[in-house]
Length: 137
Image (cartoon, rainbow, N blue to C red):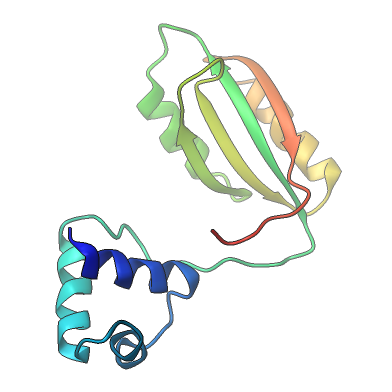
């Protein structure tokens, strides 16, 4: 990955719907070059998916999960990622092992999800942090 790829990714991170012609104009290259670079970034799994960010008015939170040292993290993260309210599942270092980024309709729904997580055999602890505001980096 080179500087041109990084410039393309910077534009797409801010708006994944930006037309290739507009990206090309912004970074000073051709539309064909942008198209080929994006295709290669997808093929190389640098770009995992194109997605959107929403302002739903919902409760957003990070739920940090500590798991049993003998638990298989991969299977657990796959199951957690299937929950409707989960936007992201991060396997992290530190005191906790997994962080869920949640978009719940209300605090009751968030609490139900936390209870559901605590009932999983592998889960030893949870910590919840409400997301008060967010900005695009």
